[in-house]
Length: 214
Image (tube, rainbow, N blue to C red):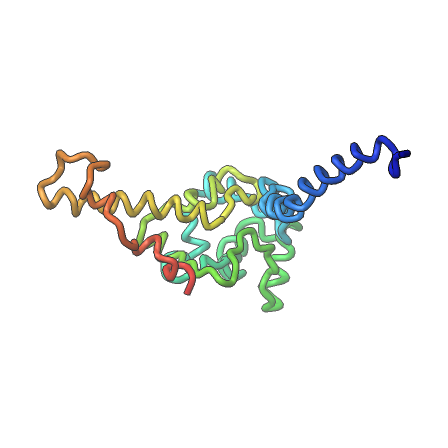
């Protein structure tokens, strides 16, 4: 009895099945990898701004502290950008005729704020409070933003993913439990031993879902 299909048909079916087995998961995996890739997130690439602002010059040469310009970071959820009036406090006297600072002067006299390009953004369903980290936890700006003082233009150097934030919160929670443990006179016990506060089950203030998702 002659074959209904040619001899190569079995090989073609096997190749097609293998292709489907790879392609179907790829429909989900490839987009997940892409959204986290440096290409999509524009990581380690200078963000173009309407004014060529060099952090190296302002922080290293002039000794200006981060919080002098980003004052809201100490007292509110948003770090904010400095108003044009703050810039002109210096540049009305320094480089007051520089063509590079024409957008700053135009903003000051027109009353229209400079349209800075945002560098970092967290999703709308995430609550983040700068003051809790800067004033409360005493974290340095470089912890999350990298060494901005060495960048001629600000770059995205961190992936603000949920896993990255939780790793930091878990580490901090562990260090916060140590003083309470020492107060009980149990300093000789290993942190890995049963009953140590760092190993006790239960929700943590820093890792509870509602801390960030409200």
